[in-house]
Length: 357
Image (cartoon, rainbow, N blue to C red):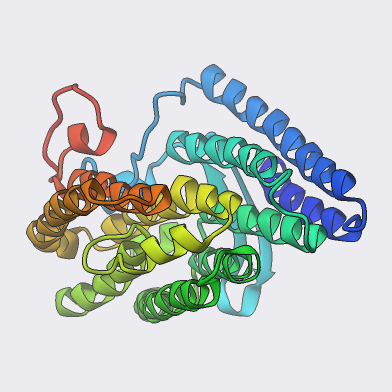
């Protein structure tokens, strides 16, 4: 229940903040209390990780050993499954390992920073602002926890709507343009991912004779190599937009520049990370052969992003646009690391790695 509580704390905190909207300090305190409880729950997970020797687990999901087989043998620090829509094999399947635990901790910490950053900046519709802030955090948390792809897509979309409100209502002079651009880029690419999710589940149903959106079931589903390439591209585009990778990055400078400070914190610190997380957790493990064949193109895009983002960032005079373009450059390294196809690049350490089989 700890994993479910991590999401519920954000949802409840957001509703409480909206209800207390007339009392500006009270609604902010409600968010901080919810985030404080989340940190307590995360501390329990860190304790469990240390006791179970899971603290060093980092992204062992389909990119080591024999791909899908290694992912199916993933050791989770905590895991929970609850039925949701049994007729279609949809469950509330949540799990956390070392990679997601790090990102969840970052989510809670930056949530507190975002509330603090908006303490004096936001004075209009304060309750609804903090509602959108907390529900964006709920979506991010759900993305980092979900192992049912229908549930994952639900939280992926949950991030989008309140973040669009944060930019469009409390942003700066060109906030409507930036919010619409952010929404259209993310929504269009998300629909491609939805089509790919449906394609994978149909392949799994043909093989198993039953519907399932569960991660382990989809990893084991046999998929025609030609179809796998197209399905992989659907996932890749969705995650590359959120990363963002060149040339799908153009929404970020506008969104960063126009968003309120708290929104910029969430964009740079969390939403961009969901793109890299999606590549590591889903795109590569579900389609290892197609991803290996696509690796040279992905690494080329990463290299272009590193050089282009750094070059454009050098000429910026607006600090937020500077951060946006440096993010494009920095996350190009992430894209290269994911598709370099060895454990050393994926873990980002100096330990010699072995190539993926």
